[in-house]
Image (cartoon, rainbow, N blue to C red; front, side):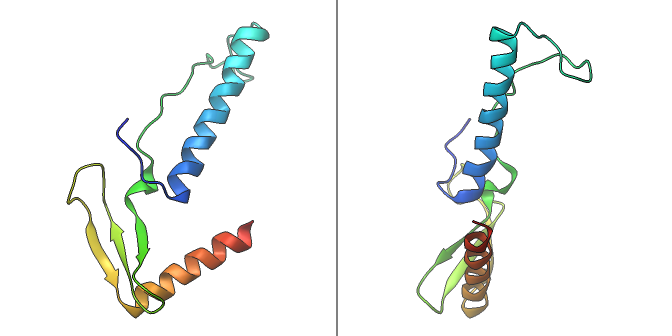
Length: 102
């Protein structure tokens, strides 16, 4: 997969896939299981470009920021959809809710 942005959401999503793969490999290799509880064959999932990896708010100071949507691994991709003080508030709310989640 192409390089993924070093922001929280893509890391969280890829971690979920990695942990599920470890559990599947454990069941396949050490418990000799080939199917899950529903009869579906156990297969290791491939990694992918996370859905939210192309969305990020970048701080440009305490009262300024920009929010990019639809970015991918290609230079110049994505759209700046929110900027200025409104985006600074958006970024603050995102950070506050993620911190509160912990």
